[in-house]
Image (cartoon, rainbow, N blue to C red):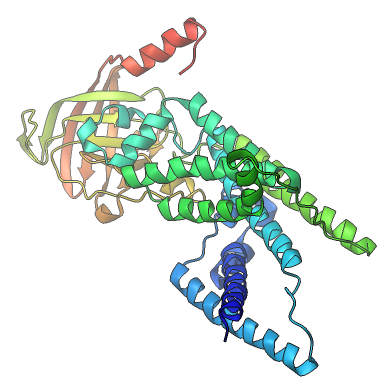
Length: 440
């Protein structure tokens, strides 16, 4: 085989491997994806369900690459065999047409993926404003990822801006003439997201890299022309290839497919996201008028009255009641850290665990209130402490005092909680910013 034939063979094989590889990356072929599709309650469709459909990523990239290599070799061999059998001259096999349609598939997949994240940032849900428990947790008790998320949550307008960038760049991908612009913005934007995930221990590094790969593929269509025009200052001709639709069903089918994707993953998903409650926090109501941080001025365990201590593993130091049905207790008892740092939008209200993920030093309980019998039924939200539960009777002799009596974690407790009139510098800054016409 001559050098020319060898290079031609390698080029043909490379294209076929590349085609199969990106096709498998963009088109969901995992049976679990379709199982999830058929499990959706379409009568009560939530934005979490739509997000899950858009958040697909192949489970094993190495397997995809191996399948692509084997498929590329078989495809090339079959093409060569057909040419020899029919005694036809070698052609490019419609490479430009194949490239066009593969690029359509990839850019639509990329658009859906980036817009899915854009809306939960636009209405800032991805990183919500810190809860009272988070505001009363020491800086060193958070993981790097949780610190990053909380830092983004305190500037909701900036989070919304990031979401708007993702949505606009994703919309640009739906049209051929603006696709490269959108892909360039996404590649640069997600490069920063990827570095943030690596630096702060985030859980979406692989997914960010996956979307960057799709963006670079879309951008490669015009990359050579852009380099010639903007860098080398050479003449660059535009791409004139356009698919030919000779049948009416082809023309209307194309418009219907694009319109359906835009309606489902942009309009419907955006509407559902806007009207949805913050998915990071529980939906249940907490004890009325009790939200705040409380010092534990008196604590009795069994028959022993324990003095305040920073080192005692069982003595409560302070207690926080959120506006929703969460109660958190700070003590020196070790916390098995929940380091989950990926997005889970479809969790039921009582299982939402953003407030405790990546946070040590506090024990988080979900609770229900029986106002008639003055009872709180508590369950530790950490899956490692499933046995830590109990029932506490409450009394409110003063507006700022709550007395708890009962059993928690197998021990009888008696605790007097006094609310702290605490001022938060973050809240003060936000208040002053609103008064001065600014917004953090």
